[in-house]
Length: 111
Image 1: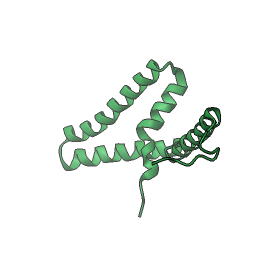
Image 2 (image 1 turned 180 degrees about the vertical axis):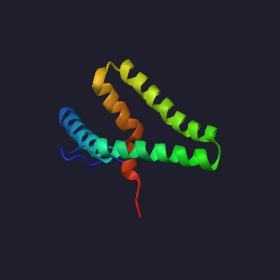
Image 3 (image 1 turned 120 degrees about the vertical axis):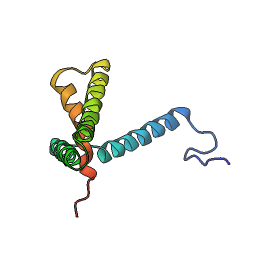
Image 4 (image 1 turned 120 degrees about the horizontal axis):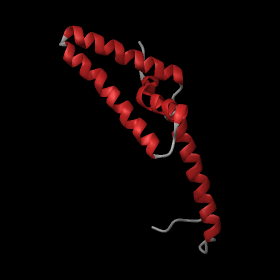
């Protein structure tokens, strides 16, 4: 199936590239907006992990509760390692890692 270009059958490669780049930029901005997390979201996520670890520790076994918290600690450390490999250092690396590990709480739907 042939695609109809606004420039006609003899599309200008430069114009097509500019249109493609503009569309990709808009798409990336939309994805960034969807996945953006703030510090209050991350704090809530950390709180949920702590409370869940404690509850699971009381209900099941303390080892299971420690595994829940340990899984998130491992994710935090792996993400921090990735930040260092990418050349991101200091407080910015810690902030980004914290947001990545615990920022998921923005999708928690409270009744």
